[in-house]
Length: 225
Image (cartoon, rainbow, N blue to C red; front, side, top):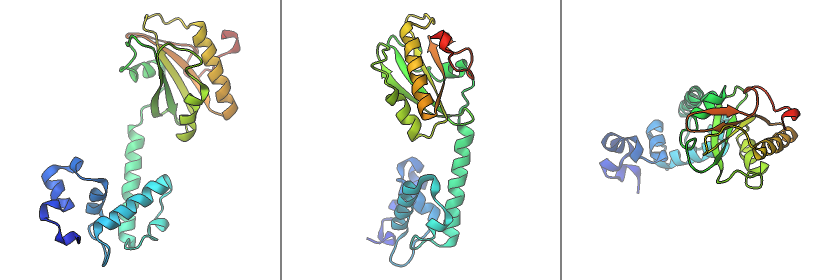
């Protein structure tokens, strides 16, 4: 079925007006941006092709690569490049800076007061901005449950420059246990081997926080362990 043969309410622009953007698929939203297709390729098909290209190339999408797509002229390619750059800049502005143990505590509101121990990793860029936070394990903290590969696999995938780890103490006691110290030493050692620093290990309670390192910029000294 050609795009012009679709019922009016099914066209992307009309669907957007009637239902709002959340009801539209990504290719439909992109079709609105493109405006039209070319002879033999309707705008939805073209939008689908462009989206696949962007998903495949991610941050490496260029004007030159877009111009290789049949039906995508210079004007539309420039529009897409502009939209991608605006999106990237907005995401940069939204990134949260993690500069202190308190910043980590604030980002752990969902589990810091839990009756179960949660171990989380914060993946940061070169400017200490949060790329992503992940829960690594839930349960009693044990080095056998928190393996370095579980912490550093996402770090490598996300191209993180550094990592901060944190876990809550359901008892509310912020004094690090021997297991806390051993695990931190193990993770720091693994991070040094692959060139990703473990900046700190934060202990959390519902109302307080404690840092195993002296500050967010320090690394653990061997004398502490």
